[in-house]
Length: 345
Image (cartoon, rainbow, N blue to C red):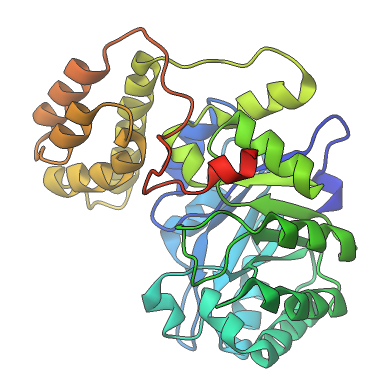
C-alpha cells in the first residue's frame, strides 16, 4: 500500500459498503473526484463459495484507472486462502480482510466484526492469509468488539504478521455507527504499525476529514457514508489538503448525481438481465435515505413513498431543481452521522 501513497497530501479511499459500492457507484463517484484507490464490497467466503460476478465486475470492468483491492469476509481459513489466490488471478491491487462489519447477521457467523471476539481465530486467519497471499495483503478493522481497550491486543496480531496496510474504523462493533470515533485508537495504530494506517469513520465533510487526519496522523482517510451523500468529497478533500478552492455543489448538482446513479445502476441490472422497475426504485430509495436526511424534509418524506420512475423523477425535480448550495454536513445528532461535533472539538 505504501506505493499508492502521495507525497502532496494524505491518501483518499472509498470505503467498501455492502450493496452500495458496486461498479455503478464507483463510476459515478469517480466522475466527481476519483479516490486514490477503491475497496470492493466483500466477497462472502465459505467452503462452497464462488466469486460473485457483480463484485468481480468492479475489478475487471473498472474504467477509473485507480487500483482496486478485493475484500473478503469469512472465517474458514482454507476457503479464505483459496478465494484470495483465485482473486489474485485478476487485476487486483491486493487482498483486504474485513474485520469490521457490524451487521448482526454477519457477526452471528463469527465473520467480519464478529471475529474480533476471538483474537486467536483472528491471529490464525491473518497468518494463513499473509502466507497465502502473494501480493499486498491489508486489513480493515474496528477497534474491538465490545471495548476499544481490546485494540492493543489486535495491534499486536497485525504487527506480528507484517500486513501491508491497516484501515481502522474508529469504533467498536458494539458502537455500530452511534458513537463518536475513538480517535486515540487510530493514533495508537499510527504509532505502532510499520505499515500505512488509514483512518475511517465519520468523515462527513472536508472539516471533519481534515480534523480526523490531523489528530491521528493517519496516512489517509477512508470515506464511506459521507461519499453517498456527497460524491464530490474526494475532490473537495484533495483541494483542501493542497490548499486550493473546493467545489461547492448545489441541490441541482445532487439531482444530476441521483439521475446518473439511477442510469448506471439500471444498466448494471440490465447486464445481468434482472432489471425490474419497482425493484430498481426500491434499490435507489435505500441509497437516497443517506442523501435526503437533513436536506429537505419534504424530499425525504416523498422519496420514501415513490413506486415508479415517473414518481421518482417528479419528486427529484420538484425538490432538487434549485441553485442554492447543499448543506455541508448533516444536522447535529443525525441518526446517520454521529459524533462529528466531538471530533471537531
